[in-house]
View 1 (cartoon, rainbow, N blue to C red):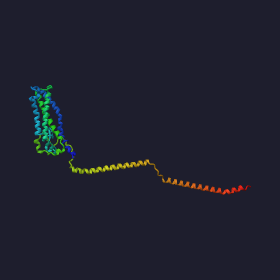
View 2: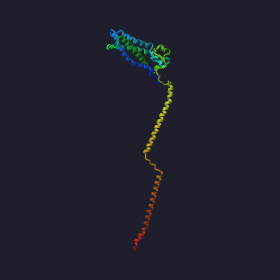
View 3: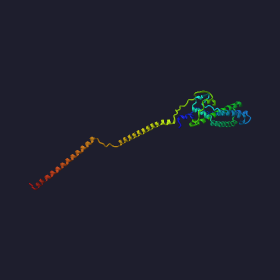
View 4: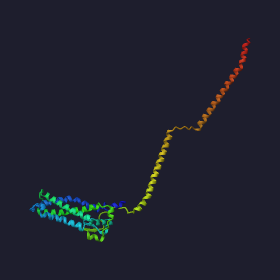
Length: 302
């Protein structure tokens, strides 16, 4: 499993990126070389791509840089005129030096050398259409120096780009280069110091098993927090729903005093009804008792 600290090793190595950025100088060096070739052609009796001067420029520019990458690769952990001491290199940086001595870097160096020769040929043909800017001798010197620098600034960034593409698992399988063998086998230019660029902060390497154990309590704590949040949200929703129901439903419960008043009114109404029924029965009885007296008076007139 890839840890955050593993990504720091090569993909975030600042020295590799600085040397890879050297490709930005390639177009400028090609323009200067083209101007030098245009000025030097007046001293050449034949077509420039077939002249001895052309092959002299090619040999001076291509052969030293190709030999450097094959025999003593350029020490990438340096910024001329400063260079890191071999004792100050980390294990991953020394593994990086081991990769610089691999056959892949040598093959890339040969391909880059062939590409450089093709570029010089194109510049020589293009120079026939350009007006000379200086005398032939200075023009030839400018063309030679600029083409040599072009080869250097092409070979070194190509090697740095190849190292930037190396994965962490592949890097860990490579044995670190011996500290005592670095100086004799690499081209170190500049004053050797303990530090040049600031080192990016890295996380401590933790074994995978230990990392899994340490993550288990964190995951359990996270689950507890998520469960607590869900419970609190559900309780809050239930409380809001109950409050909503209390607001919408009418209150049907009456106070006890109102109930007692209603009961008293009912009893009073019943007593009044009973009294009225009793009075009506008394009146009816009195009327029935007076009927014989009225009938006797009607039968005996005075």
